[in-house]
Amino acid sequence: AQSVTQPDIHITVSEGASLELRCNYSYGATPYLFWYVQSPGQGLQLLLKYFSGDTLVQGIKGFEAEFKRSQSSFNLRKPSVHWSDAAEYFCAVGPLNNAGNMLTFGGGTRLMVKP
Amino acid sequence: SQTIHQWPATLVQPVGSPLSLECTVEGTSNPNLYWYRQAAGRGLQLLFYSIGIDQISSEVPQNLSASRPQDRQFILSSKKLLLSDSGFYLCAWSPRADTQYFGPGTRLTVL
Image (cartoon, rainbow over all chains, first blue to last red; front, side):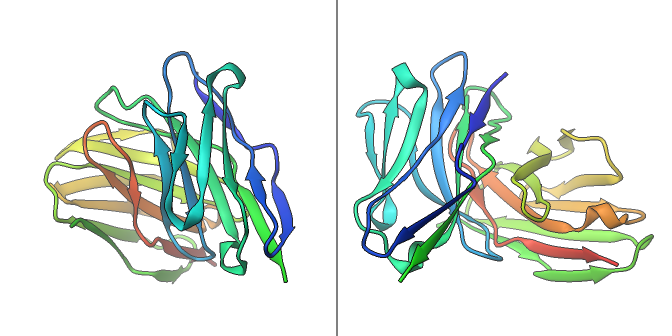
């Protein structure tokens, strides 16, 4: 069965500092990987996705993520965090090769940004 | 472009009362549709998904049910709410074999 682990439940960084959110997955085939962001009381917004090709994926709001098959990881990065990045971040993995197209989500990482 | 709506945005209901949450998608046809729940401080739990009208799969046994009366409409229901049904309910849609896109959510409080 597939699973996603986000080891850090909470992370606090200073505004302007770099950010890396960790995501590790367990999946028996080629994974399709996603990062979503959720602001308080809002739905999830897609930041970026990896299906194939270049393992470094660029997303919206200045985020990027790198797929490392050997480490079963898909970590999210941003070189300089803004106060508006404070939110909860979810990593997800899915097969995308069946009709249901279901995703497995990690437990989320809550990011707080210090001024 | 495609948009997804959820109604209502917030809801406060007494224990034992019925529930009906609505999700509609515009700008696409024959989408996959999903209902998720987020309990306070917890991740996403998939409740139901649908690959077509009257084709609904339940992922978690509970007192909730889902229906898809039209291609782009997905409804989450309950006959009698429990306190444990409180949470944030998210609807999502996806094209076949592609990304899921989420609605704005409904905050349900059961008192």
